Image (tube, rainbow over all chains, first blue to last red; front, top):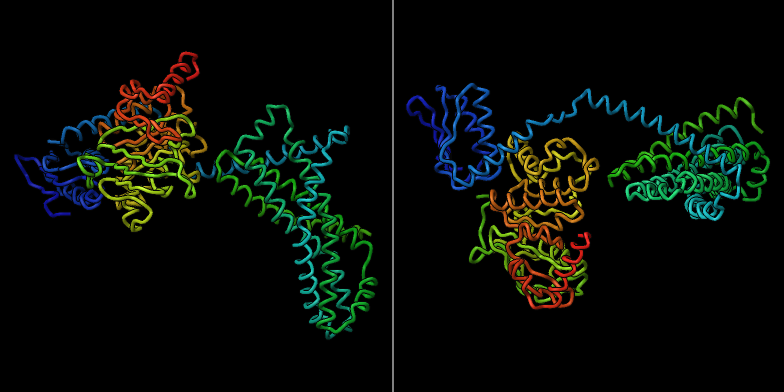
Length: 375
Length: 263
């Protein structure tokens, strides 16, 4: 900015601030602090901002002149502007009219700290009430289906089972086998000093069937199906498809939630069993490669270690986890607002809360199984 | 008065020369030639599906031209430009998209402030004052802290307009600024476009098939046809007098619809 873009002089007891050049976005950032400084050093009661030398004015210049007025008001200085180019003067008059209109309205409140606490509290209350309402509606819907089983869409449930179950098999098989291998490796290290190597098979069987298989399957279901449910239903919400279904007389709970949740709840235990088998297979490979156990010996030891209650526990856990994940995913889908970004937010939340609920439920079920010695 | 910068030849701010537009190398229209003068409100009209939006997307650089030249303020504009020059040129124009295209994670204030924060070194106070001024202009000051998802269709368009003019653009490109709006809101936007031209000297290139709006503000128009390209040009009155059957049929359809209360 040239030095003479802002000149300050005194004239008949008034401070004259003369501006030169274009008042644009390039000039204003340098001009504004000098203007404030000049106003701060004013020893007169009246300030005149002379715009004779300006060659053009942008919104930034107009905003600067307006803020200069307000600054003078704050410093109890009388301020006037002269020689504003006609078009700029008209722009300024137009802006003043709009500002006057705005001032006649109730000013919007900028959300502060207390408001944020309020929003946060309201979100928690709304979320809790929403979850209870959603679960209540789900139970009502289940009740209505139990009364009239013909209403349930078997094809849709089978489709969801295929998507959530059959299509998840490859990843469940690979990860479970790897997990069985890893559990075997850890057990080899622990068992080596206290028992014969064959007991690795017992550790793998128990660890896989009681914990690893149901939990790993649940985590895969959260990432695949829970996220997909939230995103699918969320997108339908944004595109007002759910509203359209409602006004056509469809019950979205019956139409969208039940098939997904039932399909997933049926697929969950089946996938858990697949994970059991794959985990034991991974352990067998580890036993052969690291402990040099023959696969047949290993599997005979597995059959000795295996108890019916491991299977029941895994089955119950698989069902409970899948049911929770399905409901949680659908609930977050319905919680999507009208903005596109809320689909992403709700999908992420569905995954995070899905993992949390799974682990929490696992702890609760472990306690229950221990208490009642299921099986 | 507003954004400075070089003008094109003879006060022409936008020059389109032998332009071919289309998708994936397949030309939709070829040999398009027209110019827009500084401070003019220029309207591209034509029936739905005739290529208006494709032309606009090419003019603003979202689609590469298949052939020909686009010059904005005398500077040739195209994908082969240096990144810096392209960015500078992009900042010299504003675009109003059909649905407002606001960033959904930001409130209205942050949306309008976005180009000012990114492309200028203006102090915070000045940016806030400009944001208030622009929102006052589109009469949305009361919604300053609201999220885009809380706004109606008309408010979204006006908010998109406030963001597009935040940086005092040389040219404002509008994609159907009044489509889908009630007559009162549409007239309000028409009036605002006229105010922007008068007070800020902004050149406006708008695509539309809303005859009522075009009558309100257009200085110069071109009419597009999917197969023949530009089939008429001039003021709206001149277009209405054109001999071409396709032009006449466009206006007749609108007049019929208006008489039937459909438009």
